[in-house]
Structures are given as C-alpha cells and as structure tokens.
Length: 636
Image 1 (spheres, rainbow, N blue to C red):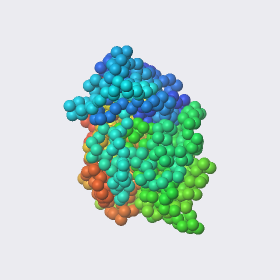
Image 2 (tube, rainbow, N blue to C red):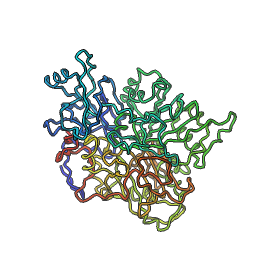
Image 3 (tube, one colour):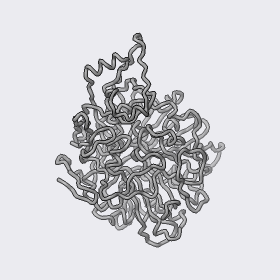
Image 4 (spheres, one colour):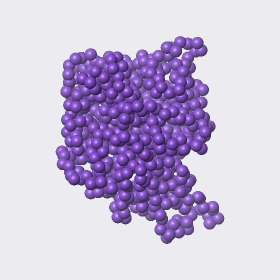
C-alpha cells in the first residue's frame, strides 16, 4: 500500500497493521541495555541495516518479541584519547511503559558475534573488546587525521581486562565509551540565573556548545547541595544507570521512583531495583485508557534546602547522550522558620500552591512527606508558572486547572497584549505527534490554537501563522545518532496518513545557534514570537508533545475537558520578570553570565519544509540513502 502526500510517497508494509488512533497498554520487552529509543511506540520497532555488510537487522512488529541485531554499525564520531569501556553491565535493562501514545519503543536484544580472526587480533594487541565493539580499523569514525587516536598496547604481563558483555548498540562503539572527565563539571558551572533554563550536554559537540549546559551528574553533584533524599518522576527508567549518576557519597540515599508502569512492565521495574534497597516506588494512577505518566521531574531535598528540576529527559543514558533536551532548575529554596504558616514562602506566580496541587493529584501516600516538606520551604524566588496535566474529566472551575486550558488561563490573566498580535507567529516543537483529526478544525486550529494565540484579555479571535518544528527524514539521517534517533520520534504512518493536512505546518529541525542541529530533539517547546523573531511574548518548556492525550480536549459541547496523561512544564511570562517581552538571545553558547535575552535553543525563524522534504515517519522504510553510520532503516 502506498500513500501520497505533499511531502512524498510512503510505502506501508503489509505487516503494518493499522493500530488506529490509540492502542492499549501491553507487554514491554526489556533490553540488555538502552538503545536510545525513548518515548516511542512499542507495537512497532524498526530495525537498522548495515549498508556496508548488506545485513539487515530485522525487528518484529510484535511488542512481545525481541529484536535480533546481527552486526553493529560503526559510529562516525571519534573522541581522541578514549578507550572502549570494558566494564560488564549485562544486567542493565531499562523499563518503559508500553503505550501507543508517546510510549517507549522496545530497544530489543542485540547480538554481534566477532569473527575468530578479529577477536584474535584484538587479544594480541592487548584490547579485549566486547561483541558490541566493531572493528577498530573501521573508517566510520570520521577523519582520523583530524582526530588522532592514541593507543598504547599494555606490556605482555598486563592483565587482560574483562570482556564487555553488553549487547551491541546501533549508535556505534562510542555509545559504550564513557565521556571524558571534562565533559562533567568539576566546578560550579556558569548558570544563567535570570531564567534558569538549560540544555543538556551532548556528547560529540564542540566544548563551546556544552559550556553552561548540564548533565544529570552535574545536577546531582554536591556542588548543588548536600543531598539527603530525592524523588524521580519519569516515564522510562534504567535503575542501575540512574543510581550510578548520583555521586558516591549520595548513591545509597533514599530515592522514590514515581512511574506509570503496570503488570509485566511494573514487575520488571521492581526487579531492576532489587540490588538497590534504598530505591522505593510510587505508581501513578492512570484511570483513563491510553494515558501515560510522562512527567519528568526531580525533587531534591538537601541539608541546605530544597530544589525542583523539571526536564524533558527520561532516566536512561541515551536521553542524556546525543539528543537535544532541556530543563528548568529551580533556585535552592531555603527552609522556612519553625512555626511558619504553610502559606508562607509563596511566589508571585503561585508556584508553591500549584506544585502542591499537582503532587496531591496523585492521591499517593508515598508523596505525603514530600508535600509536607515543600510546605516547610520558601519558594518565593520562583518566577515561572507551573503547567501540569493530570488524568481526568474536569468540569466548571476545574477545567482550567490542567492541560492547555491551564495555559490559556495564564496567558489570559498574565500575558501582555502587543500591537498587531495577529501577525505574531506561534511556534511549537515536539518529538511525538498524536492524532489531530481529519481536518485542522477538529483540535489544532480550534481549541488548541485559541489557547496558543491568547494574549491578555483581548477577545479578538486570531489566526496567526503557526510553525510546527518536527525533524524531516534528512534531519534524522544526518544526525549524530543516525536513523536510530528516529526511534524517539514516533510519528506512525497509521496516524500520518489520516492527517496529511498537518504536514503543511511542518518546519525543519535547525539549532545551529546552540550547535545542536545534528542532535535530534526530545525537548518540547512552545512560544509566541514577534514577526521579526527578535522578541518573545512567552515561552514554555514541557514534557507535553503535540497530542490531545497530553494537552486535553473539550467534550460535551465544551462543557468539560478530558486529559489522559501526566505532563509537566514551566511557562515563562515577561510580566514575571518585569519586562514587556523577552529579547531573543542570538548566541546562547558559551554561557558566561546571566543575560536578559532569552536563550531560545532553536534557530529563528524556522525553516519551512521544501516540497522534497518528508516528515520523519518511524515505521516505514528509509533505505534510499544511508545515515551517518552507513545504515538504512527497515521495519519488518
């Protein structure tokens, strides 16, 4: 079957059953190591083929089967002075829920037997590489003249390192090589204290573009406080990897995991944590079908106070490796004096009240002590607004508590009208797309557009330009990860062919301003820009993708709103910073000091798709051109 559109012809395999708009949760298959396929659909797992070896890595479409990978492609990026990581981690098994809406693709099991000669050559040279470490002489690592490798064979008496038992990675050998020491901050990083909005570090970029960016190890380091206890809210977890990100002195402190896993996935998650008695669990209630626990937040309790981190990254290494991610890092909130009313320590944005309401929505006894701790701290320095989604159907005054109606109310109450606002474009950027309906009026250009175009208490119905930023096939093919990056961009052919009208809104992923054009986005951003793209009326970073499940949709003649999933983000409004608008910062990196200009991570103005551009569709073949690792993408 084929499908024509404005952006090319798609071939649909006969094995690609139409899964409809949504699929129920079902069994998840864990891999022996994260492959970087995050927040993706589990009912389909495209495979990767090595163009050079003519071997195809077939991946069954069944969610209950595993992927057998015959040979790992070599990675094109070389990091001087690094050696293969030979530490065995055979039991690392990330667990993610299995849903059709913004769910985690099954990374699968990978095998890559080395030939006897190649293994013998490695042993004789003193290098014991795992099956995942391809031929050291492969040319796929880039220009060796520009990236010389320093290899010194050990003495004949040196003990051979233990062979790595981890499965091969579709990202190439570099996936298992640890980052250099200077990749992580060894001193207090230069932070933008004005907005406290940061990007994650990306392996493989020039150091300039990681100056002022943060890795999870930076966030959890003693430089930010003496940790006592923490909570990790997330969608996808690799518990052993997560534990290792805490510094040794904090590694055994209590951690509460808030998740949405059920049945088999929950059992696997609990099994992951068996070696870690300090890890406890709290299961989020998902009472409406097809919803997910997609919120990504850390609560960090220190001897010195309390901190909130709201991010877009799952708790697996791939999400902190070569993807564009973002986060909001709160100030260190001090403890209130003993005997202070719980209403003290509120911010002008009512962040404390909203955070407490969000936590209370879980109806979870495990969060009770954290709710009390937050009441005992001073959050008055917060200058952002909290925007959450929680599952349920809401009526009356409760309708604007969650989802896009919450965003609409905040924009109505606190944003500042601008002249000619009908020509101020709306920009949305996301990594997953749900079903929008048969035409744009069903949701996107109806209720959701009305929310995104609200500016102050104006009653004028606007129809401004809407720019939706979503990677094209070429963006994914030329990325740092190559085609496997598309596993975190789960736009399916079954959904795409029902909404061809949507693709006329699409714009390319470009982030030269932050050096991240080749780091595919898992970040989610929404903003309102001036016609010349030098100012912002507002800016939002969130876990919410472009879907009704995440943002909610009106029902029963607009008398109620239904939200399926848990989501969380923060909204920046100029009025909270005593500004009329945010000036756009042209070159956010290297970050050297606080700035009044806002560090927008993508290039403005967005670049529209050309007629030859196609949106990335993750469950159809992409085999006309190899990616940066020499592979093709072949669903089976």
